[in-house]
Length: 329
Image (tube, rainbow, N blue to C red; front, side, top):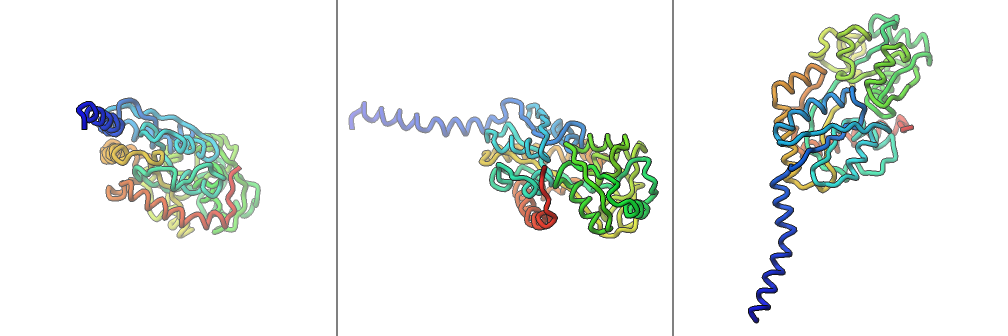
C-alpha cells in the first residue's frame, strides 16, 4: 500500500470518528446552557410550586439555570406533548404527575405513547387529597357534607383539574362510595379552581394538598378530611377519612420527571443526580412538607424505579378509568 493511500485511509477513519467523539465530549460537558422544565399546568398551582422548589436546587448541582415554562391545556397533555416532540439533548424535560402520565392515556387520544416516548428521570413525591368546600357550605363535618349532598342531588358542583385528573377521579370515587350526585367543572389547574371555590362559584373540590393547604390554614375554605390513612403535617387539624367516618376512602397523586425518549443515559444520570440532591436538601424537604408533599425514599428515586412504578400505575388504573368511561373534553 502506498504512503498516500495509507494517509488517506487514516484521515478518513479519523473523520468518521469525529461525530462519536463530539457526542462524547458534548455529554461530558453537559449542560452548557440553561435547561427548560415544562410544568404542564398554570403558574400558582401545586405542580408549579413543586417544580419551582426543585428547579432552584437543581441549578446548584447542574451549574445552569433551570427555567420553568408553564404550558397548560387538555389536562396537561399539551405541555407533556411538547416534551415528547422535543430534541432529546437533555435541555428540556417535564414534571409529570398521575393525571398526565396515567389518566390522560385513557381520557385523551394522545399523539404520543406514555411508556415509549419518554425516558424516566426520577420519582419525586406523593400527595394526599383533601375534601374541601366553600366557606359558606352549611355542613360542619364530612358526614354532614355527605348528608347535604344527598339532600341536594345534582345541585352542587365540584371543581377539577380536568377530566381524568386526581381531583376528578377522587370525586367519582367519593360519589360511588357515598351515593351522592353532583356536577363537575373542569379547570386548567388547581389555582383557578380554588379561586372560584373561595368566591363561592363552585361548592367542593377534592383538592391536592399542595393546592389547598395554605387556604385551609388561612380559613378561606373549609376542610373536611384527608383522603389518606394518616393526617398530613401541613394541615394537622384536618382529620383523615377514617376518623371522619368514611374509612378506606383513599386517593393520592404523585410526581416524577421525564425527558424525551432516547435521551442519552449519562444525561439522564446527571439529571437524576440533580433531582436526588435537591430532594436530599433539608430546605427543599421542609418546603415540600409544608405544602403537603411526601418525598419518596432514595431507593425509589432512580430512573428504573420510576419506570417500573409508572408501568404498574397504568396497569392498575387504566381498567378503572375505562370502566368509569373517563373522557377528556
